[in-house]
Image: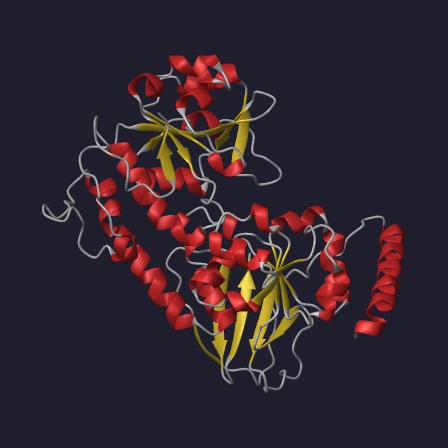
Length: 421
């Protein structure tokens, strides 16, 4: 396809542009599956994946090794074995994915971490994130070595390269709806497009449970299930503490809790129900970006035993049409609502991680009046938090430690949060 690829792509781009002008909408979104899809009678359902927390995807299993994947209750994909016949009469609303998926284009920057954890990073051969924008070292190195090729921004990828690579699947995030013509073009090139909605999970463990979907796509379901169960098991003591007011206790000798798995660490104890926490970011225009009441970061704070101090304020504000998990406040409003917070955590995932307390105060001198600043309970999240989704449980453990940490205690065990001094 190398010789004729450029001509074909130019022709398709011209046709797509003409169609967009005629329709006036400029896009063709993935086919929705709001109504029940009638599968061929030859397909016999053998079971389904039991999900504990996630509600943005589902997987049903059929004979012959097929798996029917539904995402956001709207988009459906049938994963079939390499040599299997595609069932006759399959509705055109269902996108067929043929195993093995070995040349994946990841426009979503959160999904490669799942592949990394499952030992399937070699299957992700293309990305829309530059090497310097990756915060996970092993992925950044892979892009630098060109084991994973940067193919351009998600809204303007190199279609010719993607096509010549023999792309089996393009994984987008919901940002693609700002450039729907990209999905249309990929589909015209007969490249399946899957938009992942893990960021729409309100439950942090639901977001983490998406690793089980990637286990299906990579043929590593057992590894995905084992990882997820181990992570949740390691968090059970923190969850028990937040529910039972500190009844869980760490081992006196090791400082670790039973069944802590990969995320073993000291679980703090005591009454945390009165600890007010605020997670925020100050923009270049001086406005303060804070999390909404149903955002997964807010839920992590609550899971860790804290109380999100801005819950009532943000829940009273109009909902964003974009479905964003955050909202902007004027500094005056933020000052009035958060001045007495026990713990302040600055969102360092937006490209501006702070090194010390002075860096924070330089953003606005009013912050010096905050209780948490005076008490020395100010932290900054590290920039790897967003991309390293598999660290969700470790982040909850960090939050638990920060919420319960007493004067003079060290913070060396923190992974995704650092104290500002």
